[in-house]
Amino acid sequence: MTHRPPGEPAPADRGDLDPAAVDPRVLGALLGRHGWRRRGGPAGQYGRWTPPAPGAGPASLLVPENRAFPDCADLLDEALTALARSAAPAAREVLAALAVPSDEIRWWRDTPQGPLGATPWTEQERLRSAARQVLFAAALATRAHAGYHGSRHRRHAQAALTGVLLGTGPAGSGDQGGLTAFVPADTGRAVTVRLHHALHAAREAVDYRRTTGSPDAFDSAVRAGVSRELTEALVSLVRGTEGARIALQWAPAAGVPQGCAARPEPVEFSPGDLPALREAAARYLQGEPSVPVRVTGTVVRMRRSGPRGAGTVRLRVLAGADVPHIRVALDEEAYRTAGQAHLAGLPVRVAGRLESRGGFRRLTGATGLAAVEVDDAERDRLMKAPEEGPDYLAEGG
Image (cartoon, rainbow, N blue to C red; front, side, top):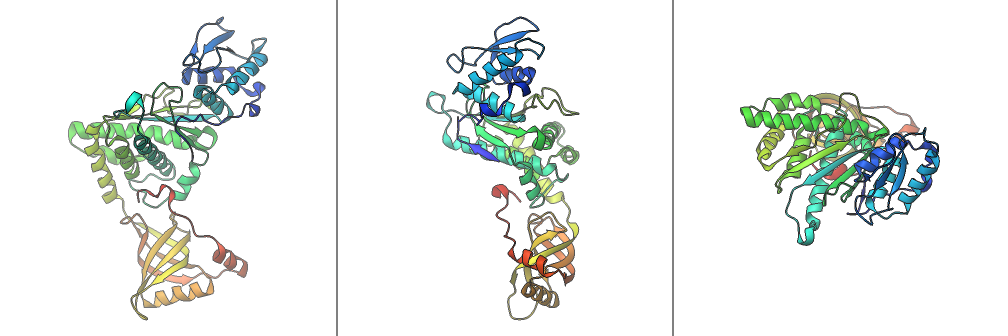
């Protein structure tokens, strides 16, 4: 996930955009989304668009309504050039969306503003952190339906967010202090769709809890992508505010995903929702069961209290569980086997239950630990493979 400083427009290069490849209908939709106003033009031929604020860009743009217009290519070329020469964030946002068709996710927190309507730097950091948690929770849910993911699926979620651009600023909407994520439609559409369903399911579950007193709706909401990680992210988003909301808009060039509203309504949460969200987070943590697994991994750490007896080893997981590392308690014989495999540069295989307590980082009831024979080339690769860095975002789990 890439970040840009507050207020800085999204990067775009006019040289990357070929007018012949730009759909005029997509350009018109993006201009309208980012605050431009259509001020006239012959119906069915072209429209005259003006920027969100006077002096915020070119005086106006002429955009054909379809490719059948005789001067379509020339008008598109002129419009793209004018946008590229403008320093206005609204112009740059449109170019960015044309260069990489992206779904847009926007967050707002209703908090008191500083002098002259400025948003405090600490508030921007809180909003950015909460937005990242929301995105990461949605990315986790594309991998599996789970009330609590813990340290599972984090590598997959991090990969799913590659290419996402996250930056603050009005993004052409006229709202100060908001934040927008541009999620490439070709690689990240699954994340946006999952977030769309999960947010509405979370909203409905909170309403059901507040109306009936029953938290049962949160159980069925897991199938839509709601999890401890998402409810905690929403708590972070809402805490310290008078309310917060999230809005999604689909990339015009990619169309509307099946089963989703064409123009989704923003989903809002208020401080009154916090007790239900916190209760759901605790419920998910307690309710997620342990998982039987058979893991193959390399020994990276060994520890026991004395020269003999049982001990604990830390494995870097190669296969069998979607977590980077696990801790395994072993009896004396299994501990000795693990030590011999470590000295020989061999991985080990062990069966047990991946416990939800602690974030699915511990294997209990370990049985059948044995070294796995590999050829010399594979052993060298395993010995030289770099350790995985800290968990993405270093939050939760």
